[in-house]
Length: 109
Image 1 (cartoon, rainbow, N blue to C red):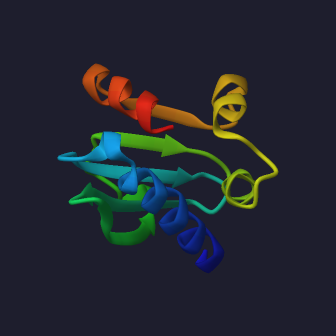
Image 2: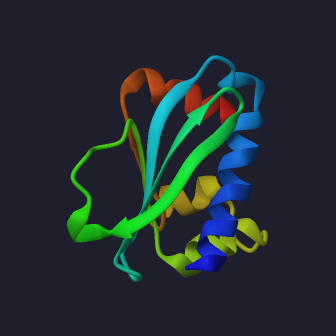
Image 3: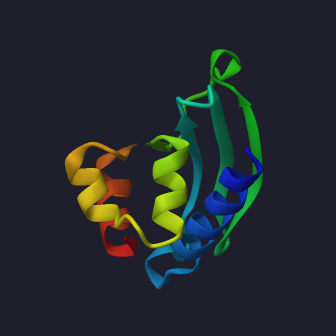
């Protein structure tokens, strides 16, 4: 789980630093079904805040931006073995968000 938290901080930090993310303030989550964990946080002010992991069955709130992937795919995204667009297109990575957020995320990814 420690490796996944480090990987998420890196990916989400890069995302938050994108010029397209300016002024964005959204809750986010990343579900890691193989670890039975959800990592929650907030994307705001050009960085990621309050990242915390919790068991899937204790997760009640629905984030504005939701990712789902295995821990192996998350680590592959950070070390360059997997690119986001093909992973999303093949279903390895799921991304759910409102239409406005999806349009903004498209520019950031």
